[in-house]
Image (cartoon, rainbow, N blue to C red):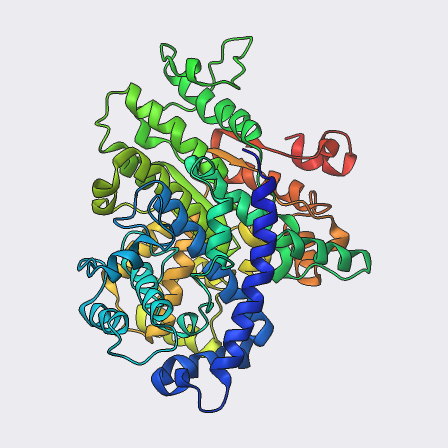
Length: 532
């Protein structure tokens, strides 16, 4: 894939969207603005978010949310997964198909609520005063379509009912709009492979990455919020292929010596000597694969394709395979909400490509991407929980685990949950208790922690990753202290800590495939960990 045009577009898009969202914020915040009158609840949320996070962070976050959605909608359009093209015109036309249809009196009743359809029609017929009725109508249609994808892809299209809609950029229809440049960069040929989404994300954050490293040269530590920008790299396709084929592919061939899978693996290197000590697998559903630093999901999408070939070879129904893979085989863990959403989207698009639009929309299985969140509990909350559930369920291991995720965005997959059976514990909690038994907010946070702990449990046949790289000098103080306490033998760099963690995430005789520096093979400081 030629990424030159994608890089130029993504870097331009970030600057342009931040500028446009900031301009929209200024207009919305002006005294007596229409947005404040018509959407008072959303405006209050906006004010509260700015008070908590600052105006700059809110603007940057909203800019990226819309970048994510625009690129996803373009991919859906080009690959005919959308019922109607939302950001793309039909051949020979200039306006997005959804707006052209609305102007002709055709608005999809299944995708656009009745109240929105009426307002769009009234705008286009001149029944509602507007300085730019087509632009206003298109904005309403765009938000409705984003909301319609919530059921199928909640990780990327969470319902827009707050200030995100208020800050939607104003110009979306002109030849100089962000969508016009988007269509030029995301050509139909480029959209044939979902890896385009990962490349766009890397290029979008590349300028921020440069800023982080410039600060690092001035001895400014990398704080948790900047770890993704400093450490994420989109892994080239051939490296991904080499890692996945020589771990997942190798494991399957050991279990199925008569398999023809090797014929489909370009980067597979067959062992010179027969292997007898390996994990036994009875059927494809048993295979557990984890990427503990999954980024936008390139390792997982490649594993999806290889797993699909395995299921096919075993004679499974093609219409059932995508849901089986998402349900049983793949887990990704990530600290960056934006990258995690893209990883889930990429896997969903793999499923859609195999199933077609109608079957994909009916599929209930969702990608298993765990985006780690900072979660904390007050001492009174912990006391209340203990009093309600009793000592038999509120064990010391559970208590410790609930306190391990206060710095989840900082420590990531390096956290080793004290609770070993988090999945079983989560099921017990859901069976025995509900939000009414405890404070609802505390109940929900407990389930979040148990889900994160489950994703970080040592159950995997294969762990594959391109881990973050960061020397000890770049780590913020809390990360440094955590590394010294939890990874004393590999604390010199995040990549080495992730190697140690990946080994622990694997079952006995499991396989680990990872990109890493060669220093772990030569420096004596790594010997205690990697000579075992």
